[in-house]
Length: 118
Image 1 (cartoon, helix red, strand yellow):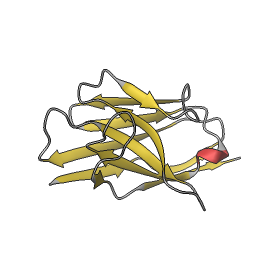
Image 2 (image 1 turned 45 degrees about the horizontal axis):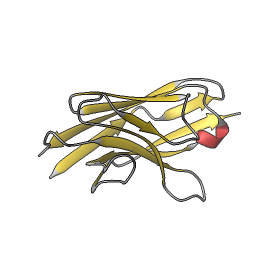
Image 3 (image 1 turned 90 degrees about the horizontal axis):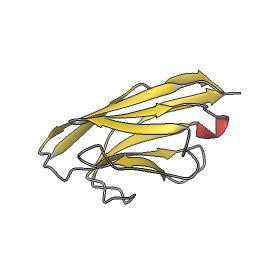
């Protein structure tokens, strides 16, 4: 089994920046891609970004491309969010064992709330 623990949620002003972190532990092999998904108020959960095991390859949704950056150090994945917009308000979920580019794996974190105020 794999455990994912997120941190870094909070309240941010529009136009600001924020960073989320997710640490993975447990049975992780060399093909374990990780990613972020989010679910806004009244919306379905959607893909945000994903990164390969090596950290070399990243994928982004069109809505965050150019504003968000996903990175990885071993079993910790980060989501650097810049130029935040109120539409980015959501619960952000870390996901493990992503089938790249964007199909979620079986492992989910507990979620962390990001609220962007206008």
